[in-house]
Length: 283
Image 1 (cartoon, rainbow, N blue to C red):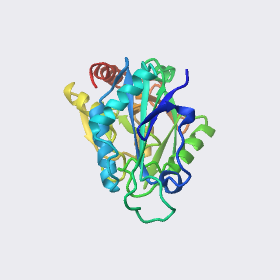
Image 2 (image 1 turned 60 degrees about the horizontal axis):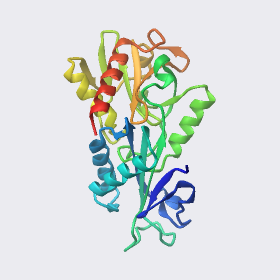
Image 3 (image 1 turned 120 degrees about the horizontal axis):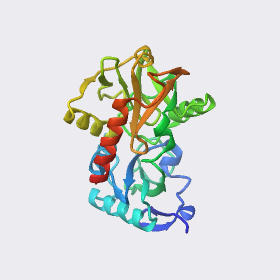
């Protein structure tokens, strides 16, 4: 059965979904996207994702194409139509179709596209052994807090990571790790302190990151929100990253150097366990 997508008010097979060549998302990457996880057939921490989606749209003065409650209805309908037990829902809004001009067009309805992807998250083999990370210079723009569809820098970083035999890229600016190519970054120091960079315009405010910090605080773990260097990451007892599509992913090596024991550490394993429990109970 063909996957069903939603495009501008219509449910249709994904391979039949079409947008104009004059869509501003295609011409200018003038748009915002969001990704929510699905576990056991229901949305995970979705209110947090919709809130970030709405904020990003507001930051570029892009009007909502529908109410948040309506967007959530569409998410749930797509999950049902595609029988998604585990995976993600992707949503994207662009400034719509208009003659090519840099200035915002007037009286143009935005384009809303949504679709699902099935994916194994909880029992992902990579989570059992940890992944390899490659560090690269962060060449992105200054408003990384906006979840823009302009992802060329991340594409180049991810491709460089793949070519190096790695599964994720960690962006570095002035010696400090900003974030992953599509994730939030964490280390655990040798004295058992959980460290992650604080939110700012330098990085995307991760929804899974936010939940992990709240869960870690509830369990009494010591936390520090501060920037950390590549050298600190290499010397860490543990490292991991978080995202909607991976939850908590252990890092075994960075730039070929083994981190800690080279396998998921106790804090990483525990945080992954409690996040999965949180995900099963949330929506």
